[in-house]
Image (cartoon, rainbow, N blue to C red):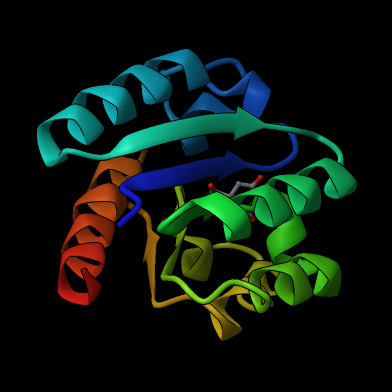
Length: 148
Ligand code: DQA
């Protein structure tokens, strides 16, 4: 049984720490990756951590994950609210998907209240800051354990 999890990040998250820190905080994506690697180690998970500003690249990583992984943690960033293509790719996966948002999208503009990815997600974490990623890994480990 695979213990491999893909952690995927969408557009502009490469600027985490510099980008609107009053909304997204001061931690960088490298900090988030380090936190995820530490938590994954504790949970006995192996992770592939990726970020891209390109929709097609995220779709290609989802296709890679569907062949090899046991779950996905994804912060699709702005593609959350626009991408039927990412939803379709996730719908080809028969493992749990956890959606993460650093900010509380429900407290923000109305266009952030709708998520295509939520239609496929086992669960959604929003507004817990970057801690949401490690919480998502904990939940994924539990879900993977249940299906092992
Ligand atoms: C985000 C929320 C999205 O609405 C936004 O487009 C992002 C980041 C978050 O992590 O809070 O880029 O996904």
